Image (cartoon, rainbow, N blue to C red; front, side):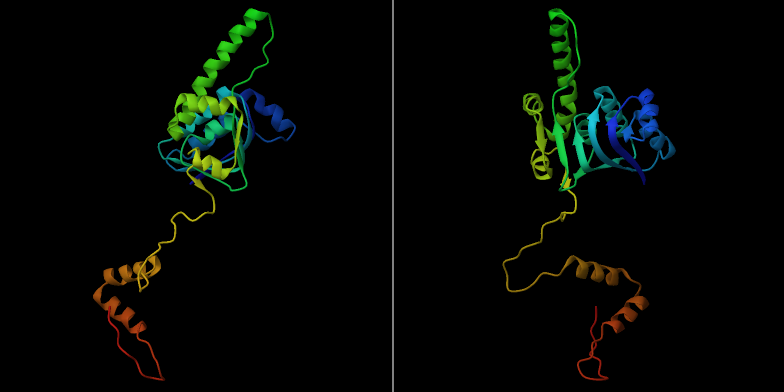
Length: 228
């Protein structure tokens, strides 16, 4: 199993030298592709702690991960904001109870006259609708529900992200709730049933030896035979 870290700003490939020069965390598509190419048939663990970055780069990485045939498992360890939250929607995702996830609308630094501003507004609305499909596919929410969440720059803790189905599990929590019963006797634990299954499937001689180990002594030197 290989590991991919999505850390720092999400940037195009040709920006990478700049961030590396100043020893700042960053992730570009080439970083991700190198790991996928090195381990093409292995499932990948993806660890995200990123404030986001370029939306087209986030989309490219999202597409790489979602298309990885061997599968991925995503962990949000610090923050998954903006473009990083799109990447987090690429597959099964767990989130640290102390982490944050943020979704918002696409922004730009447009300049020009009123026609330029009106044109850019339409471009941004189109980009919002394109990116919201990642959240829709992950959660089952409608386009209007997702766009409303994006327009309000929504910050979510792990529990809120789980409730909206943006993640699949909160890290470190038990996967299965404790089985509760209403009876006068206790059900066997999963560990006990697994030991019994092992004994039942063992060869006859091996099972006999295991049975000997289950003989219990109440006093000293006297065994009470028990069978499986």
